[in-house]
Image (cartoon, rainbow, N blue to C red):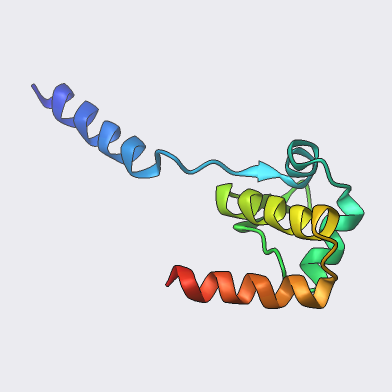
Length: 101
């Protein structure tokens, strides 16, 4: 009986983290079709931020969630398909963020 209690507790913990997917910088770039250099520029311009920054083998590891992936795809679409420059992308993202509140 005690074993079932601990099992349901672990299930609750897993459900609480369900849907949270973190990917590395390399994986994010590959999935979104951008270069790591481009991502670095967008981070420098505060258009994208990692969900978490950890440390792996003494070096910084940036991890990105689904929201960051969605945002990267929006930025890519604005820049490549609609030919919006970086300051314009920043304004559009700011407006989209405000509308989402």
